[in-house]
Image 1 (cartoon, rainbow, N blue to C red):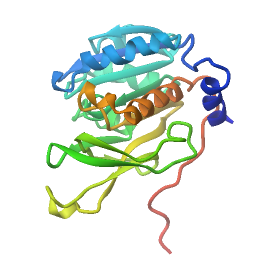
Image 2: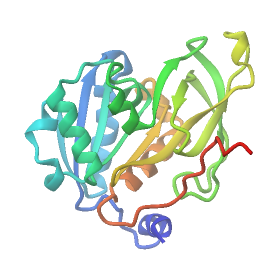
Image 3: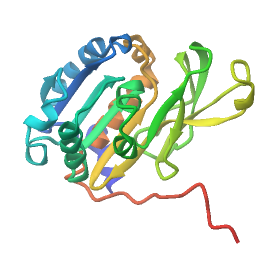
Image 4: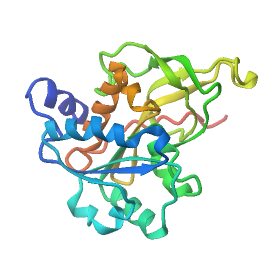
Length: 251
């Protein structure tokens, strides 16, 4: 029912789940990932969908806002930074209490390399992009979920992220690595986009978006938009059940 309502909210009713939602967009960190240019893609879109958006270039915003009551969704674009203890505590408490969080590439899953609880929340951590900027294929693996329904496999010319991933995320898209740049990983299938929960908060991640121009690929942009819409509904829809651990009990 939750998935159906997410899809119908946009396609049939003509309104977005983001309408009236309070969104905190936090950007900064390493500027090589162009968080400012990505901000300029997503913030106008969020506002066009009816969201009430606060834009911040400091992690201190996690402490200053009463996110348990004031924020429905956090979007973070912050690569390779350091987060202070009180900032991390406030962020984790907000998400676990029902604030959604969404992000892409290093802005969410290569943010704070020393903070393992943060990584437990996001569901993954970047560890390599063999070959740097290369051509690769993204495969849609879940054709029923509203985030990826109706989308076909597509090609990217960007960094192919090799991720360490929580086995209990709901994987929506993957990519397969060759042995050209690291011989021991040939044939490895790694998630590209996923959903998960941290407490009551929805978490959405896509590894696409090394630079802002990556979002000129229509599927990459659409996946991120749909994931954001899903993540903003933590407080308003039931928790979805999908846990399918990779490692079953050995008999």
